[in-house]
Amino acid sequence: MTQLRIPAVYMRGGTSKGVFFKADDLPSDTQLRDKILMRVIGSPDRYGKHIDGMGGATSSTSKVVVMSKSSRSDCDVDYLFGAVAVEKPVIDWSGNCGNLSAAVGPYAISAGLVEAPTHGLATVRIWQANIGKRIIAHVQMHAGEVQETGDFELDGVAFPAAEVKLEFIDPASDEGESEGGAMFPTGNKIDTLDIPGLGKIEVTLINAGNPTIFVEAASLGLDGTELQSDVNGKTEILKLAESIRAHGAVAMGLVATTEEATEKRPHTPKLAFVAKPKSYIASDGKSVSAQSIDMLARIFSMGQLHHAMTGTGAVAIAAAAAIPGTIVHRVAPVGDDGRVRFGHPSGSLSVGAQAVEQEGQWSVKKVLMSRTARRLMEGWVRVPAN
Image (cartoon, rainbow, N blue to C red):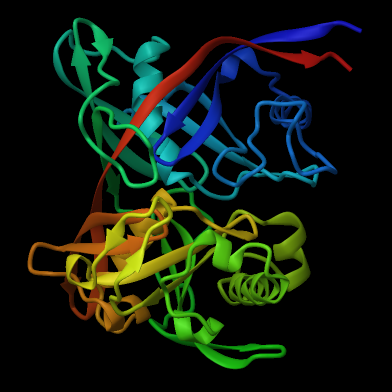
């Protein structure tokens, strides 16, 4: 049996890793494309290990990106993201990956999709095709190459690297091609869901970055300081979290049934829980003091508690914290500078939102966040032809 030989780059972006492709190097038939991409990652894997593929058997490392030059006048490249399920034959194209968004600009430059200055900052205008939003990446250049090494430290990543500054433009608007619709799809900043076996709980349902559901940690019987080891592997907590996520997806109008949310839409919406600041020990043994953060935040991704914070989760946190009446704002309203600093399992992160109120309606013009990115391997992936 022969193997296909497809050009690809394996990249880290923020606290995620994924395999990047040019669209022209993949089949135009989406079913065939998805079959190849799943095989690249090593899914579906009934052992849950991704031994026979490039995936890492976690939501942070089972990802693919498809890139092309953009036909839009306001963007340079189109960026399509796929979240690959580990044990199921599913690629969820419904949302963005905020972490891998940090790698899109560097990849676009190194792959020759956009031009960049020899030195200084390159600005890459990105069309996020999954959700129909614009992202602006500011990428450091040196001697005609993307500057990947540096001293910017990102909690959840072991080594420092060059800072990539991201601007998520109008992440919570109902403009563009997103299916998400209004920032608050129910028209409410707080809704009540009736969850079987739990009862009624308060939630904030928001479209910002990705469709996201916010609850207070206490609603899950948690205190907000949990690490992955406190949650993942505990069937009752994970089932409860998925039930809330699925019911929230129905309430947001993203699916018709909770079963559809679980089987066909595992990537979005995300479920996050928040709490007032409390000191805790992060996953690397570092102490995070209550005085250094404004709130605690954790997020579930593809059925598991995330080891840090998804990039789109950070966008949603910034947007919700900026708008009075949401659960996030109730826990931790943004400061005068529009920024909020939250503690996550791997440490802490600061994000900022530019939000304005006009005639009683709130809009988020921009969310600002810094990440790092690096090429890990360049070359070709091999995939069995049949």
